Amino acid sequence: MSTNNAGFNTRAVHAGQAFEPRTGAVVPPLHFSSTYAQDGIGGLRDGYEYGRGGNPTRDALQEQLAALEGGTHAFSFSSGLAAEDSLIRAVARSGDHIVLGNDAYGGTYRLINRVLGEWGIGNTPVDMSNLEAVSAAVDENKTRIVWVETPSNPMMKITDIEALAKIAHDAGALLVVDNTFASPYLQTPLALGADVVVHSTTKYIGGHSDVVGGAIVVKDAELAEKIGFVQFAVGAVSGPMDAFLTTRGLKTLGVRMDRHSENAQAVAEWLQGRPEVEAVLYPGLPSHPGHELAAKQMKKFGGMISVQFKGGEAAARKVAESTTVFTLAESLGGIESLMNYPSEMTHASVKGTELAVPVNLIRLSCGIEDVEDLIADLAQAISNISG
Ligand SMILES: *Cc1c(COP(=O)(O)O)cnc(C)c1O
Image 1: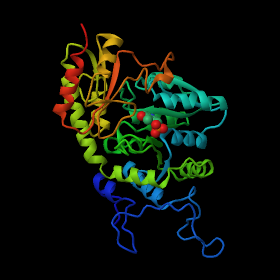
Image 2: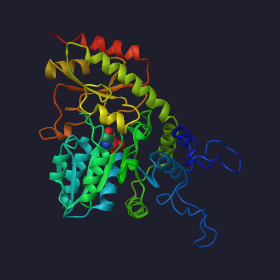
Image 3: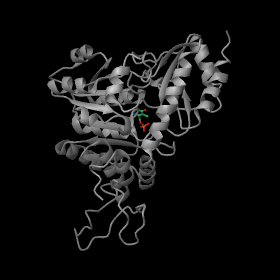
Image 4: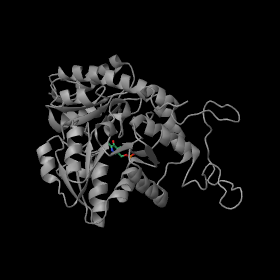
């Protein structure tokens, strides 16, 4: 069926997932073959030649991703950082410059600053939610990419994608949105003017904490050709099993995000009333500075919350190490609730830089469990903070 104009959940279930014609198998088969028989030299069947260049299971995922982000082309990679690396190599050269959020994912900053920086690509971290600061940081002669996460990780700042696209385009740069936290169910940056969406599909898209992957989605054929070339020439593609698991997860993204958002809203409201809590960073709270903007550009507010404690580092560490339903672990976006202490875990690589995360902050990835159990777990963990 053509699903282009169908609703989100219909596209999630059906895009790229046509049944197998020989047997009628409803789930398309998982193709492990690394190579494809040719009908005479150069006689390819459906364009398939060699697994790095093309694989039907990966293609099915790419079609599904493009349909959900409202793009024309999607590219699937072995990790989110592999996707980011291939994207930057496709569009930036030595001497070029990237403006990125000063609370970008630590691994993104490490890649841009410490790996690509060595190849002569410059960067300026800036508070993306401050559009004047972004305009000042963009250099029309050099800036090739403006890179934003909204909501950002872990400070949960909200940035106006439409306004940022204008700033980037006026300077001749591309706007790249890391849409990992929102997922395409809650936010579709390409429709708001962004040129590229990147994902760590490891998180909400895979959704079950059982596969590492990344993706790039675009809506421009020329850009797609450049990225497709790097995907093929560098080869950081997702394997067939990874692509299959990601596709399976992606089919239920909508129902999962509804529950993640509902649970996080209840947890955030509960946390806000606790005397031990200094601040709850969740865009679903009317007190959040980005609340109205988030309500405009997102369908719901997502499953991620950051919390800061009045008792400083000691209190944050105590809570992080006292939960039993929330598992202390890096990563996010799975069906199980996770707890993270960013300054020592996910964001240890930016310690001592201007991207450093406050030491009294913990980040929660609210899963799809019963919300009463999540709140009870946090209540007992917070009760361990000594006065
Ligand atoms: C995890 C993450 C990445 C990196 O993705 P990997 O799959 O771990 O390589 C990039 N951006 C954000 C926002 C992330 O959470």
